[in-house]
Length: 87
Image (cartoon, rainbow, N blue to C red; front, side, top):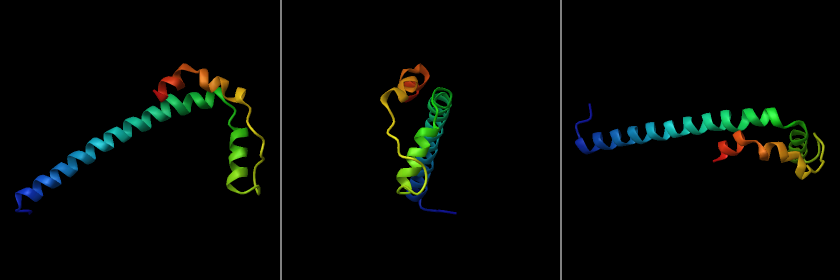
């Protein structure tokens, strides 16, 4: 339906770029879910972090404020799957 060749070409370029970006997004999503989140759920108790987050976003109406100690993150930061997921 489009008779202008330069417009056709530009639309095809946009379509190609979209497909490439979508592929990269899907790959990133897979890596994030499989290499970071799943091991995270197995190595950390997320409840203290969630309660702290709730407290902060509700300005103290929900959750509790308790600073998280550095050793809270030890299992997470030493897990090879998670470190490789970030790489």
